Image (cartoon, rainbow, N blue to C red):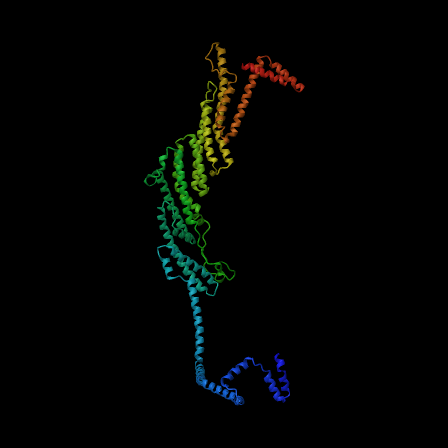
Length: 632
């Protein structure tokens, strides 16, 4: 049976009771006996409700109230210590509050007494901030516009070190900063500082100039020509003073001029240390090596001197002036602010620039070796070397002239000297060739008995071949830088100078054969006696043409391997073909006349011309038959 069904009779019985009692009973009945609160109460009740008797039930309420009083009494006993502690804390808090009130009163009274002191402290703090700002300004000013004591000492010292140039750069920086100062209301201070820095700068540059002149003396003893870094920096710094810079440049030019002259003479006469390398003049009997060694030495020395001059004069120029603010500006710039402000000196652009031009300086240095070199080359040429040697010397000098021009320029004195020597060598070669040509024209070679080319023709052809070989080594080398037009012109000049006189002499010799035969016949006819017979080959009717052909063939055969002589070889080949054709035509005509066929040939030719063709084959056959009969 469920709980509601089981409690239903009791509920109905309760409803029959008085309303107040019914509510209480209902409340008791509706209470859940298994709730945690009821269970806890019953468990607590079981601790002191031990007997279930009528008296105990009647005194249950009283027992519960007594139990509650006991529990409260125990709680009060247990919390007495806490109450005492709280009372003590409360007393301490009261004392602390009283102390805070006393402190607050003391602070109020102290604040009232120190209000004037606080105002004074604030004023002093403001003054401190202003003083610190002025201190920073003064420090910045001293950094931007003042030299340190050690920097001044460096500028006054005779020893030039890297720190000296740093101090000099610092002076230039301050000088530039003063320009910006002139834009402000502190123009007087800017002017004074600029004057002070200009004084330091001028003294430092004069001291630097004296140091450079002393270093140049040591530089003259340095054959290697290596430039110390400090000397290069000194020359760069002196550009700000053109006059001092000019003095130093002149000193460098003079010392290096003398040093190079001395080194060149020693290389010619003494050689290197311990005789290695040997003196250049020991090779004087060999003109090509002698001149080549001198040119090689000059080339090496020129490259070294150019590096030295570039290191001294082409170093980065120090900027004299400050940043953009010191250089730019409109109406409020330094000049506008102070018309009397000193301007930075600018180097002149005429004489001083020319004296300091690296090319001009290098030219003055190399000028010392021009005359010794020229004298020795002239001595070689005056010793009348062979034409081939003179030609090779001219090509060698031309080549080195081109090499030197790339280093020192075409207007340099040494390049002009080498060019002049090359022209002299070419003139010597041309005079020798012209001398040989005049000799051939004056006395042509006597024709040989076999009509072979005479030795003079072979020698001339071999000489032309050697010259062409020398030309090939000069112009075919890409490093020489010669173009095709120059090579062709040189080839044509050489062949014309060497071969044309030989060909003319051969033609005159061929005419001598014909004249000799005619004189022999006239003498025999006049005297009627048999004279000494002529050479068999000379008596031939085609001896003149055969001799000319042999001479031309001898020249063409030697020159055929040379591509640059192709034009001349073709010309000689055409001449050989023309002479051969002329000899064949003359011989065929003679044979036809001797056979009585000449008139027939003329009639057939005339008939062929009138009829427009048809008889040509017969004429050719007749000519061929006549030629064959003549050969037999």
